[in-house]
Length: 580
DNA sequence: TCTATATCACCC
DNA sequence: AAACGGGTGATATAGA
Image 1 (cartoon, rainbow, N blue to C red):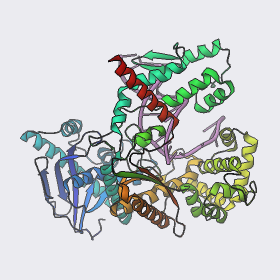
Image 2 (image 1 turned 60 degrees about the vertical axis):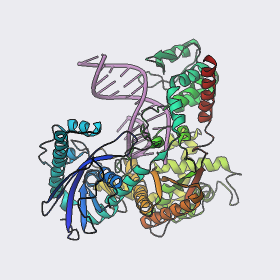
Image 3 (image 1 turned 120 degrees about the vertical axis):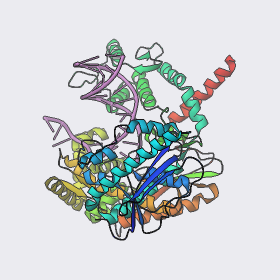
Image 4 (image 1 turned 90 degrees about the vertical axis):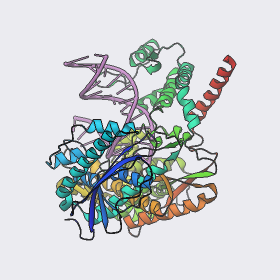
């Protein structure tokens, strides 16, 4: 059951209010000690509060979605004890299964057939907390009671789950990672919010400008509910007028996906090409839901352990790294600060090389340019060839390598390369011939996953593949989940070392430091990332690359769409000042 | 008019 | 039957 090393085990919950993009404002806390049943209830919103429980090394706190609780600890300046997060453990337990009542505390309780009394006015209480203060005495009691009801539920859940928990990893990795998550969520990402405000304000004008440059008569785009929408039927009429045959789906609908559109635009040029650019540009230009706090930082839930592979899956609408990449120009360090985007080089390729034990693949990784190395190993590029002399062929081998990691077939690779299935087949054959050990391993993974219906990653993250198993998903899972484990370790090491980590991005981190300290911060980050990779893949550390952005530089320099939009904004503000 | 579903765009 | 993994979210369309 619960390891005896923990003298006291506190089920704990906070209620807090918070603005989108802002930091949590703790309202109250309830904690109950598992063995003694000692109950602590504190109201926190009326001034400075020191921690009512003298936490030390022999305390364990148990929470559901602990990053929220730890976020409150951080705001209150309390020291943080060891953490068991039953959300992370519930995800671990049921990963790959569809759970009937969701991933929340109630869902986990219902999953374990626990009674969920007092759950009926959850929404009401959540609203009350979100509303923020001041609160009447009755409201304070309501919130504390509600908070306590969650703690009672949590205690039941702990009782039920304790014997299933892999304690060393649950506390030592996953709980510890939830602390790192809280720290990263607190740091957040500096945003050029003036620019963001401008973009939001002139949004429709920007869009109108972009649309009208291409479709002045509104032949394809319709003005509806205050904005332009691409209308398929109008586009079909235009194609008819222009006598253009267009690929259709089996159901007879126009195929408007990027590949088809790109192909048609390339062949036809003219208005089709312009509309293609426009569609690409307009896509995902949604900025209203981006969560930017009053201190001009993008903060949102990082949604740890959300995917089957254990990756974080923050909301694409709320998280700047979820938006189209040209919008990263909005990421800008404040005066005197610098940012660095540090990512593992060819992370999944390196993981595959290690896990499969394929010597050729390891050699290719160690060469520094796995794609070129593969092309050389396959005899497609001479030993003295370089990225510069054999760029095109290297790109083909690169696409092949990346595709294989996702389980691509010859047909898919052919389309992707635009070179046909026959050539794609040749590339895949070269991959299989060159990396024989990798393929033998991958075959074993598929067989094992299919037969056993479950896979496990280096530190015990697991996933069930019982329902509708997809062989390509099974083959990819070990690489992606090991990547996620490595990322968790690096996040733990980095935040515990005091580095200001703004956020994780699957195989990368954004960090922040004073401009004069950024080089050292990058070096330390690269060091912890190397350590995390070597702990995950003993004897096979992975390299990382770093991209440093110093004030007043901004992220993602050179994105054409960014420059175009900025140019339009200048034009718009000039037009405004002339009108005035 | 609202909701469910399909399709597609973006991210790593 | 098709065959590119893990995701979130917007939009169009169909159906109630």
